[in-house]
Length: 345
Image: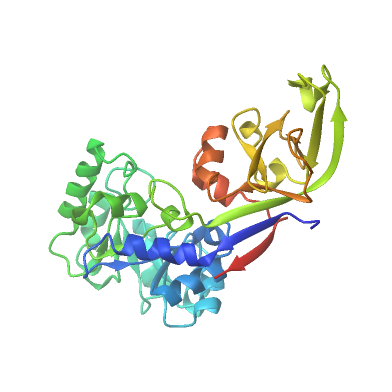
């Protein structure tokens, strides 16, 4: 193998969707967030698998992502666009039957002028102060919100179940939307796990589908195999890598593998507890992660394989994220375009 390969288990992806779907009441729809190219795993493949598993509604960040999805899913699926309707979006939204989540008064006016007969949704800000209409902005549009396909907001602290902002945002969402006939959604992955009072009519899990926290029971979806380019013997006292940060304490055998931070393997994860695996045997990363290369101590192997595994069923995106001081989202969505993708299931 000369190319690093990202192995994507679509069966586990769909099982994660089913498990999250089972967390909600029977009347609540479970959608799927597939923005950022399906969190880096291929939106068309991911969404097609989830559609077969039972998902009917999908969320993307941008109209261009929605256009790709419409081609893959056909006309039956509902595709919502979080960014709403920006200046040049009308044609893409119309041609691909996408539903913009209108998030500002100027977007509401633009939509009424350019796409008056199309479906729309509304996004409200209930305390995150990131995207969506606040109470005073929404008030003049409340009557027309009855015709929205969906009204949503987003929780800022759902990953921390006892954070007081969760209940504050829940109360604000009720205050803004109670009495409206439109369907409502407040819960992403974290909100889905908070319980039924956060579910309303639709839950829209994202990271949990792909094996990330806060859905700690998620099955791993992505594993990563990287080819070995070269091995060498390093004598005790010699150093490896930039800035000579690793010094051999014994005569060592070092393998250099073909991936680095240009492939989304964040530089900061080196020097911690992260290993590469050969036939299940852990081999520590040594020295610094560089742009295209990582060095690994393979002294204790009886042979050096052609490839080694970085993401496995036991060393997940969350382990890499902890080592790099970041979150699983960043690891997953940054996995490099140079990887070949192998889909199973």
